[in-house]
Length: 211
Image (cartoon, rainbow, N blue to C red; front, top):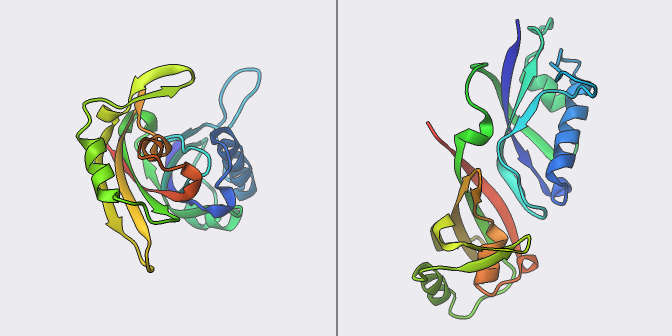
């Protein structure tokens, strides 16, 4: 009897510059260390069956990542899956909880419809609220990605200044479309505000899942 397990985890500062592919590999090593009966794909190069909900751009941390993995059988252990994952987690992955989900439910990528981010700006921005309003009032925001033009504006679902703890700090809240083929990137929003991404610390704070 196979099981589909969903784990919520944070990707912390230690893995801030870890790519999407390398995060998969980190989870493969994590699962090997747990000793759980992980299910593998078919073919010449079997790999553990894993699904990450949504790619996270390099340089961005997160407190709300989601991964699904499959077990080939029910674990023969008195330990909880959650405790085994937490014991095996490397620096940079902080497993929050894990639980069984329906094996035949849609892929995680099809569940995610939007994502929320907070950008902590390292310096005060002159006329920051006016710049946000100007961006929101734009009919289109043409950007380039992989040498192709696209309109960022419809991918921005919400954008506002947000207070942060500490004197003189400015924050930017972003809710961006995160569907397959129409994903808003927080660093592109910053660039559209004439803010270089390296002048901010960006964290994903929520993945919005379609019911």
